[in-house]
Amino acid sequence: MLFSSLLFLFLFLPLVIPLSLIPNTRIQNYFLLIASLVFYAWGGISYTLIMIISILMNYLFGILIENKQQHARLILTLGIILNIGMLCVFKYLSFLVLSLNSVLPKSYSVPQVHIALPIGISFFTFHGLSYIIDVYRKKFNAQKDLSILALYITLFPQLIAGPIIRYKDIYAQFLVRKNSSAKFAYGIKRFIIGLGKKVIIANTFASIADKIFALDPGSLNLSLAWLGIISYAIQIYFDFSGYSDMAIGIGRMFGFKFPENFNLPYIAQSIQEFWRRWHISLSTWFRDYLYIPLGGNQASAKKTFRNLITVFFLCGLWHGASWTFVIWGLYHGLFLVVERLGLKKILDRTWKPLRHLYTLLVVLIGWVFFRADTFEQAFSYTAKLFSFAGNKGFAEAAFYINSEVLLYLIIALIFSTALPKKSYLLLKKYTMQMPSLAKQVFNNLQYLFSNVSLLCIFILCVLYLATSSYNPFIYFRF
Image (tube, rainbow, N blue to C red):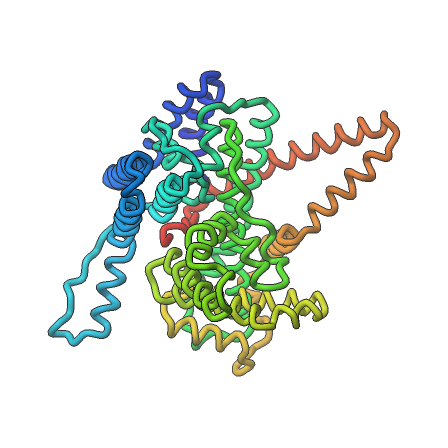
């Protein structure tokens, strides 16, 4: 069940929203747990059983780590192995067999296995891992109430697409949380904004990207190649940040405060800054549970570079069971190493637009490998980005662009920058200097405009969903 589906918007969500009115936090937790299990079970009962096994396993390991201090390290190691082992079986076993068969003689080939990938397994596995690791680090006591730990892992707003939430950041909210009309209103606003990002912007450019990437690379020209990768860059950002906005919004409706997951990554002026702004919950997870335990940047430069490459190798693999994802991760890791070797100092002395152009170019080329199905397609596509051979100007690219797409492109570009936020702050500053009566009138008009805009966005999203069957779910690969 997707947030951006009519089933969710007009059946599931209206049924669970009344749960936010339950004043008793404990009782509300039980109902939210049931709702979350139903939400996940909609994609398959067998998937839910896998997640329940993960919950029971991590619940047991948390208690054992706390009670058996003399063997805590061994218990933690076993817990990590089982969590990662489960992830490997369901997400990577087919990939590993396929990779092995590609280098083995046919007479020694291993029978290919086909295992369905449980939706969100990468996310709930990382939740479980962070929980038992933090119990071992004594960041908090092991949770004795199974229902609370189960709710932490299954809470439906963040279950299938993040953000990745740490138990230490949210466990107090499972015990006591207060809802209010202001929080609920903010939650609705944030959800609609996220829905608009996903349905209106991301889906529009996903269609263009899919069509262009489906073409034979040999038939591409310069303008088509750039249109395709820019469309994909817009798709993945507005899709992923849109889902995060919807998760944060739904969470706020029930009194939860989830961490922000994106902070305008396309305005970054280095790859280091890009990763401080992109998928923040994932990058900080890898930093705290892998990069720092490996030594971080406190060891020698050689070991620091090794740690960065290791982290981004695994970051790429986390995103999908394909060598193209691995190359994407190593590619970003390599640029982080190069920036640490001195490129960052050069960039800091460079004209700001050039720094921005460098970062966008690196990120866009990286997205080619992230989106491509094979190495051959990725390398051929990248070559077309810099080839003027057979170029026919913008005639072929213009075929994919109409007035509607152009409008959404302008909106996407504007809302990928800090311009809306700066404009709002400037307007707010100007409003504060108004006489009280004028200020009240202006605030009322602003409130009316904001609510009418949100209503229009919601209606437009519903119309798109009702009239089109195209609604891709990018996280199936994660």
